[in-house]
Length: 312
Length: 269
Image: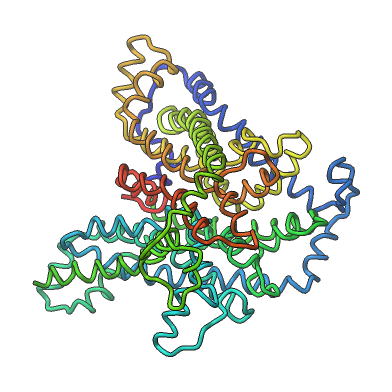
């Protein structure tokens, strides 16, 4: 309903057609002037500054004075050679794809479940939105305490079924898993709501016909729901990718990317380089950030492409 | 019979999903001395209000700042995105499609990278650690979304309504103010709700641009609590509960707007 409206070429008559076309354009751009100025000042300029940061050799002093020497791609070379680079890339990809896979699968299962009408289904579905609406610091700190090694409820529950306690946030083997678990929890509502509205768009007659032909509910899901939901699924997954790649808050609040970089992703690495140390490394920090933008844009452009193709 | 079974399953699933929220509330009422009890208390028997007393004693300024930042972000977002939505939906200028494309891309840029750019600029301009600086940065989360919602909504307003006003001699600006805006109430509510919620929840901009400020938002209030060595988890969780109030109110009072906002941009109907 939204994106294709934005990008559709006007076919029908528009407002003020009696006015000369040129005049209409001027009026329209007068309304658009605030957003254009805004985009240049608060999107383009910060991004340009970030690019500039990544191409210069900054020290704290030259950062304030703004006279750092141009150093070409040195910051990028430094970042690529850094021991953190490959682990951070791996963690970023693992965090993103594992989170998405679980969020989508659980979200889809719940959407199918809630699509059946039963008492309270609308209310319960609304309650499922809560994790998505809570401030990330609230969710992250709650999970931090739940996953506490000594006093967390998760280890207590594990002990009840005779599983040894796990050092969720303090062991390098488990830190990444822990932040992924928290992130899955936060992302389920988005997938549920979007997939649910996708399910609503499938006409009931299709299911009725299948039921008449004697299809089992398992067959109905794999032969009807799943294929007909493919367009919405593609959009959900790609949007999820773009959003998950840039997750910073949860990881930083729960583990700060540690221990020993075990949960360090590009987002947290970039932040640590620029703000996390006493001696900030703005150049490399910005370089990592720009690599993250490129990753996000690849998925983002793919998303827009699919969105437009569906709109046609 | 089968229907009520489904309701029961639904209740159980919801219970599992919301367990962390329950746990947050439970811990917020738990006494310091019971905090490390083994097994943990599943229910705050002989609980305490210590945590909430700490919120009132220490967190009020943070909450006030967050409220101010949230409201400021709403106003700024509406001022910029409503006229833009009108132009893109109804005046359809040349180059409008390109602008929409830029807005879509803008939404995808990671906040942490925007924060670094803002930091470099704010440092030079001397607006680090100020509330207007934080409002400006927070609005970047909501403006592209706002334009998107307004464009989609205003496309649905019949052209006749606007043409009638124009024929009566109203200027485009006048038409926008007295015809378009009053019928766009739903879009205004949706955009305002999300702009407020995102500004209220923001941590990335707060920690980078306002980390040393005199007026810090509640997200930093919680973060400082966690960073303390003598972690008072009942106080941390009590603050978290209070910080969740806007989200809860939103869900209770404006549920349909919330669902509309989540699906906007992801699904066509």
